[in-house]
Image (cartoon, rainbow, N blue to C red; front, side, top):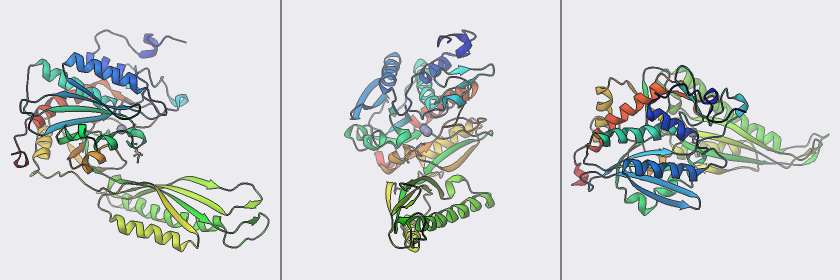
Length: 416
Ligand SMILES: CSCC[C@H](NC=O)C(=O)O
Ligand SMILES: [Zn+2]
Ligand SMILES: [Zn+2]
């Protein structure tokens, strides 16, 4: 086995690598991977950064072993609402046998592509925030609004012991957030995708009860027949939404309801007709859908499948707040104008999955999901996730413009 630092393993060839890229790769090597993320190492890393940059560092333990780290750059007018730059520190598991390089070594190939779990989702963004602030501080600049960087655990498993708890704490209220940035997605074209809202995740478990008996007989009203009907109704709806997305050109994945059958359970033996079987569905509902009507539809499908068909929620998010993206909104105006000044093309969408932005928006703060990765395939949660170092470095330049612009938004009427 090659040692972890061997250039054949890391792709390190020259010592002229940009120090921001080196820091990014160092962060990627911290194994904050589920199911047992090494959060202590990440917090230590962030404490070191805070000391290096001369930033305030606050640690909030929202529950045992779950710490939110907040690095703060105080503004010249701390009364004003702050800018929150949020990122999560955890990453999703890997199927190591499908990776061409160890996903926790941050191998860089001859084209500058850095391969690692978290390269896109979203350790890039954490380091881009940090490096932009490092550069801004180095020029001696100051801005009126305070800038906070929050680094949160457990986003990938729903944020229940992370951001969901944090927004309810006095320490969060004390941040006095005016506007937040959080993660988005890569875009393979020249355009950058920007997210102003998210779909609501609903995870439902449908239980069908029926008559049991010997596997050789035609038992009436079995659990399987009823479950089959529910599955048929739900998958037919899935097909309609899929076709709608395909046939209406202006629609994106964020605009239609997605639905997948993700778990099937039940049965004890080949020759025993079970009295109970379950099917679990991952449903993602756009903010424009009437949730009450949708729930009634689910209930109707279950009722139509026969007696003894019920469902319960394992996840039911119902806040449909979206962030304003009209030019009359002072935050959006500054965000979009600054991007325009850099000749960036933006496309505004609804995020198709769930991020911690939903908790920030539900707490009443505008939040935009934005990971500055254009000309990059969408590889989050995929094998061989990578980000090119030039794209990464360009992202730092983008934040180096965005952060001063946002932190200089003049006092708003609500702040008077
Ligand atoms: C719905 S809680 C799980 C959150 C998770 N977020 C990122 O992938 C997602 O599945 O969207
Ligand atoms: Zn993420
Ligand atoms: Zn993710």
